[in-house]
Length: 357
Image (cartoon, rainbow, N blue to C red; front, side, top):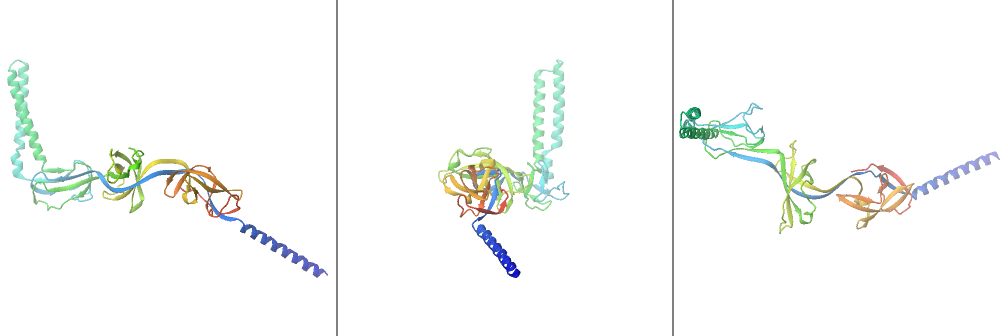
């Protein structure tokens, strides 16, 4: 008799346990698994894209003004002869020419001596005139001789300076034709090219419809396709006041500081021009929106249920869109599992991801 009671009691326990497990299983099967994201203010921008080749704002090619024996100079920073890639400052002497016959023809020393003599004579005549010892005509004649001597000396210095080739701007040597040291080189031959890579510019063509929405000072993000992680920020500095009749586009100039020289002149880059930017927007993935126009539906999770929300959109950027109204900070937005959801459907949160920019 006791054996029967114990057996019956055990059977009831097993039956009750089995029914409980089924209830849990059934209950869980009625909930929709979802992934949610808690909304936080973030940044979004309205962008128009363009591409182009980036160029240096400062670039100069120097040719020789005279013939003579060519001597490439040493770079004081390296102690070696200048070479491509070397950085130079404005005024650095890169090349010198030697031509004894030319130097003798200039007669710089005798011209300088004549300048000193005429200066002394002019000062003397001026002093005598102040004392009444000479006429004004004599003073003026001395002044004319002094002025002519000064011009002759300045002209001789200019001719002599042609034998020294200096860097007219600061930058990097990008071209340096090879000439044997001491060899005779004719005038008008290329000596070197210097580019200032610290300030670059890009000419972009933009669709006509953006003409009244793009202005000088607008921010531009520049990215090279081979260096996607390195983005430089520039700005629009010039806008053409005309539309190309064939392409229906207008041109704009973007300038960018390249202090770390991440970009090289000649690189092909993508330019993202920021038309509008918000730093405290509520941003959601486009893919979760259902609807049309600028009015859509999304789902949020509240107390274990999916609640359908009507939202209105604003700025769009890539696969993201700004929500102007319908959502609030801290709302738990459904970003996965929304496809089969209905309003007030029971949900089970599998994962709660962080807000992403």
